[in-house]
Length: 170
Image 1 (cartoon, rainbow, N blue to C red):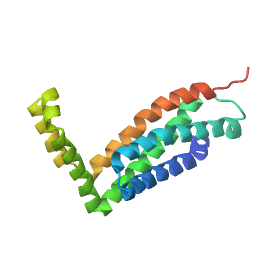
Image 2 (cartoon, rainbow, N blue to C red):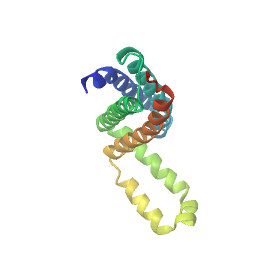
Image 3 (cartoon, helix red, strand yellow):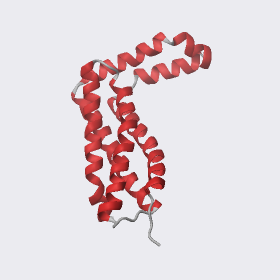
């Protein structure tokens, strides 16, 4: 396990830090930091997973890579990216309550703007439930949402990249 962690931790840490920096950059520019940060993760995760698996195959494992090796390395990388990004976003929002309130107000405004459409498609009860959940949202909820939306595509990309980079000697 030490061999796996030793070859992946930098990819995960750097990727996670990039995600937190993207979150801050999007806020500074004036865009919706939560949604664009997730979108940035969809681009960043496959790049770091690819580089990490390729590094393991070529430099650590002597040019061989089984599907299981690729899945293990990819899992460690995308999980580390998700943990670092989630903790970073939680820390930023905890240290900046006004930023958290901006995000919350933007999400409430989206609900208010689209009320007729949501009620028409899902019903008043569903709208009221969602509205109350958004109003009760915490910084941890935003961080957990970002964490989950980095884990799910990370698994998908890792499967594909592990298949593409798989190489065994006969």
